[in-house]
Amino acid sequence: MPDQYSLDSSPNNQLLGCPLIPSYLQLRQYQQEAVRNWFANKGRGTLKMATGSGKTITGLTIATELYQQIGLQVLLIVCPYRHLVTQWGRECQSFNLEPILAFETVRSWQSQLSIALYNLHSGNQPFLTIITTNATLISDGFQSQLKYFPDKTLIVGDEAHNLGSRRTEESLPRNIGLRLGLSATPERYFDEEGTDSLLSYFGAVLQPELTLADAILQGALVHYLYYPVLVELTESETAFYAKLTKRIGWALNSKENISIQNNDTVTSLLMQRARLIGSAANKLNALRELMVGRLDTSHTLFYCGDGSVEGELSQESSRQLAAVTRLLGTELGYRVNTYTADTALVEREELRRQFERGELQGLVAIRCLDEGVDIPAIKTAVILASSGNPRQFIQRRGRILRPHPGKERATLFDTIVLPPDLGRETLEVERNLLRKELKRFLEFADLADNAGEARVKLLQLQKRYGLLDM
Image 1: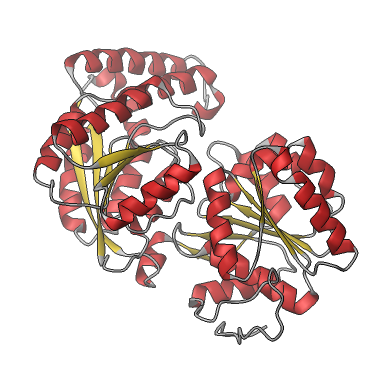
Image 2: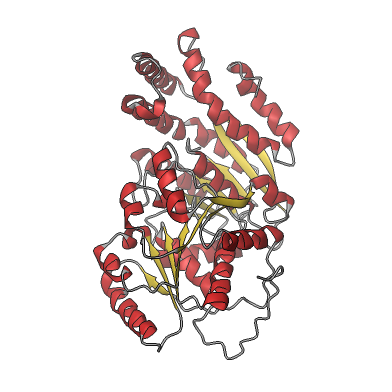
């Protein structure tokens, strides 16, 4: 296997649809190492690489090497969302591939796949690329075709942590031996069993594990400035917060040594409180103050409350999305549009182009930008709803820090709700819950170019809750 990937990519009678390294491609050192280690691990493994560091290109390079070395016949790529299917489709074309995009209705892809598999087995077609979604993978229509995939098939699980649920993991094809998992965060949130199943299927996490700090150091991601924006709850929000916090304390103390993740009552109360914090009214006031002085800027992303799954938004999230759009567009005259899971794929593409050209100054988004969406033109992000899930926090950072021509540095404004002072009764519960969240804020502050300034701002929060040891 070559040490460098400035491979000779002259066609040499190369058929369209067969993998070919693009002539312009030069892999970074860590990508080369990842490719070598996957082969050394006998065609299995999970690559844990920071969002934005080139997992897609690394995966397609592995497929190309397999084609050249063993005559790989099928590349099967599985993505959690539809927009990632089309995104992978674009990347595949630069590798000379003509993928079948298998999602939405069975009629749109099943006969195409059946004919391609028949042509493959009869020798009339040398290579097949198919990109599908997790939802389509587990469908009867797709499952019935898997037995016809040849031995020389590579399955790539993109954002592989999404494949760890029991139903999805059971649908992963066992007859395919060559397996590659890709994720910045392969560990599933509060699901050790799902994480184990996932790594058992795709293979262990391989070196190098590329952290955010590594990616910035190597130039795969840009430097950034980090500005925490501290927000207080209103009087009525404080009263509701206090009520929920007391109930959390009672639930935690009702049984000895109970863990949060195994207590449905605590989980439900924490989710209610997270929604309250996510939609705190004073965030709009903070946003207004921030944007009044930034009306001549562009390429800004505004993250609103999280929907629980793609295609489903909570009432709080929908209200915040509408309120933010109204504030920015109607009140301040900032040219924005919304970008959510409900936005049609064709419209998303047009919004992305308008945003990159600066025709739209900003996008107001909910969750569907958390995983895999590539809009490197983002220069500034305003986070109005922080997720308690570290995976989403990590994904978002990578979205913001992707390199783009003319983008020397990114800027992040992070609205952080200050928990109200509820007295000694709930202080210990609050400290324990806040410690994990504060760790993420501090980590992001420490990697910023203005680390000292960001740390001073967070000191307020640390002092209030006696967390100066962090």
